[in-house]
Length: 354
Image 1 (cartoon, rainbow, N blue to C red):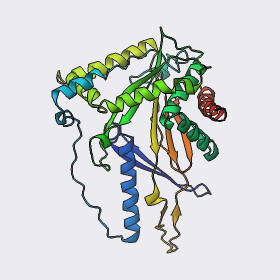
Image 2 (image 1 turned 120 degrees about the vertical axis):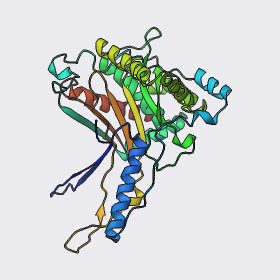
Image 3 (image 1 turned 60 degrees about the vertical axis):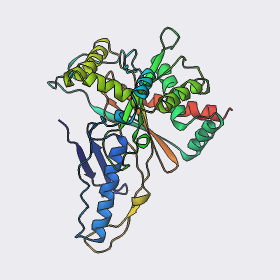
Image 4 (image 1 turned 45 degrees about the vertical axis):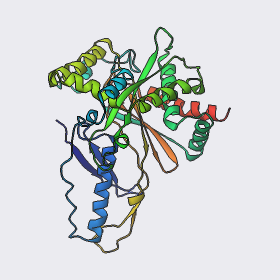
């Protein structure tokens, strides 16, 4: 029922400047698509500032489903990809387990409020970010691999939880498949597929120790014709009708709510490329036309309703930002901010002790 896409402008007469927020419904676009929409709006703004009569070119309709992807492969390829992909979102733990209020703030019917939405933000300085990147390079790991590992271990520390062979813990993450299938880079459709990353560790485990396992999981997902097995699995469920697909997800959702479990979610959005609109002309009516300079850009997550919990990472310039959106009524802000701090400190500490 939410708007497919929305633009909010927050005016500030003080030194902070104005804030633009581009909001995209997940059914409309994934993170990449949301960024594409934001870029298109900024491009239109620049053109209008230069020519008030400018009319954007109509881009036309675009496909909203993924049915065409499996058709590109043979039956054997689809079956092999399906073997490499397990569509399972079985919730087996939760960051907020034990914190959830089962009173009015936890009612999902809409009759009661869900609790105050809050964001916790931590920006990693350029100096520390350079250290982390060098650490990853020495160990053959991407920034995504490192931050997933730090997220998992820091979660275990915060929960006082141990992951072992009998109870491995996992986080849910996603990959953007559009470049694997040659889709238009400006197409805002949802082209992300979800998968889990599992590791056996505790709060004292070095990130370096679980990086090989995480990197192997991510590589396997990509090398297994990224997303094909997941898409084929979902299409197989959907063949039974939309109700079957809804029932599948509702079953896991209901189980998580009843047991107060939900695998935490981690998403690395990557680099926010704003070079096309770092500086834009002003539309000031007084004729001064002083250029407007972009000061910062970051990607904000949705508010995770308990027991769900997520951390989103995005990079702008030489800094990386960690953000979590959550219900204040069910998730302690101090605990969330301690988690984000521990992620950074853990990575920096290991980067300084090769």
